[in-house]
Length: 195
Image 1 (cartoon, one colour):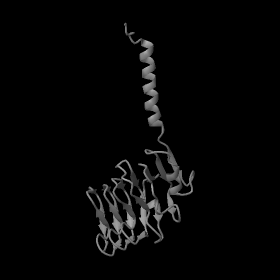
Image 2 (cartoon, one colour; image 1 turned 60 degrees about the vertical axis):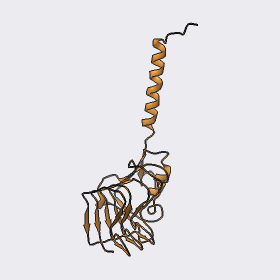
Image 3 (tube, one colour; image 1 turned 30 degrees about the horizontal axis):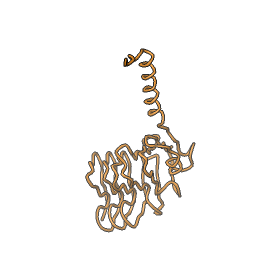
Image 4 (spheres, rainbow, N blue to C red; image 1 turned 180 degrees about the vertical axis):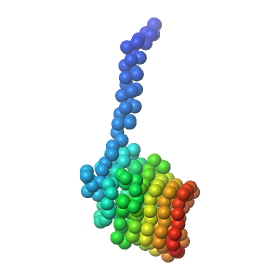
């Protein structure tokens, strides 16, 4: 039995299929903007179809349901202020919860970047962000005036933390500002945090 030799047409068809498949993989990443497209940060997160999407938040102060206790579920997302200026993009939790609750084994591909997170409150851990069992990265954020009834007044994390400022956060027991598990903390400033 003679096995046919692949033709040039066969190779072209195979190459086209591979290019289309890789392009489809790259093309699925979508930017979702708050508030121009979605009224709240959580609404934009919910609209993200898959990992790799970005939620871009315009400058302003964000309060209320949908702008606190933000949960990305199982998706690896980048959630950031569009300006990357934390002083201009504020999540004010109004002592009614925390800003982010990340708990689904995200990788370092999940990034929270460029926010001021203030007035977070929780009866447990991580008054501003609770990044539990996740390697999500926290970058260029300001944590101010957050409180946890147990520990980690501002941030409880197992992900890396880079260029963040922690000011005036409190916890009833341990870690007035931060409680970290296997994290790398780089370029951060800590001022007047208490536990």
